[in-house]
Image (cartoon, rainbow, N blue to C red; front, side, top):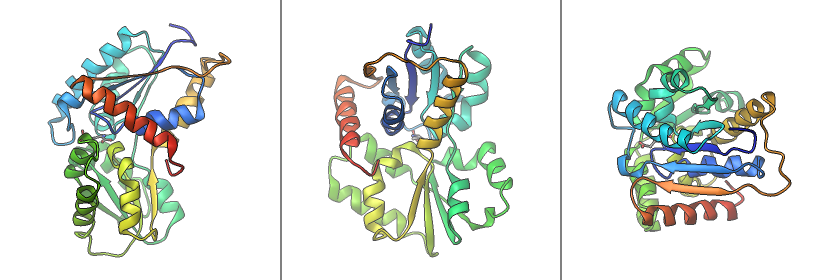
Length: 259
Ligand code: DGL
């Protein structure tokens, strides 16, 4: 393994492709390998120990590809497994956390945090909220159906908008900001914007995670300084169709300014 080795990125499925996209934006020279564990998605409604086992299996595959760092492009797997993964593997492991801090800093009203059941009930989330002075402004809501919409490649756009509307209609308070604490939900940003008629701020942890990765590689002198663009390889545990759809969804993100 050296600075020309790939960076490994994984998620329970297709959501982490949004993180892959952000990494690509700020470090185009890095070669990336992504594993979506769609065969076992969703992670958010499983037991913590099961998510830990699944995360280890995926990391073992990434390690066998000689990666120089691993990004857990999944808030759920980070909550369940980041500590254990860090003590198991000898390379830097970067996790994710819902972007609650910037949301509270930049707004004054209520902040809606959308994430998986597991992320919202895990100790890591509790500690994060307890550490904040204005944690009382947070409203949390799981949205498991949204994970499914993205795993189904958002093929029926009317159904996606209806489901997003149905979920957000449950919120009775006035919201000033939304935090997308699940990487799948990033794909639903245009639909969330439509629901709120562009009147709420939307935050996610993708850029924070990508910048953390960059700083870490820089501090190890491990940034890939090759003069050409790096490669992007996408694998998926479910099927070849999911691999094809993943490339389509990744390319779709690359064409939209809002991501
Ligand atoms: N993409 C994952 C996250 O960021 C979770 C989706 C799932 O439930 O598998 O939390």
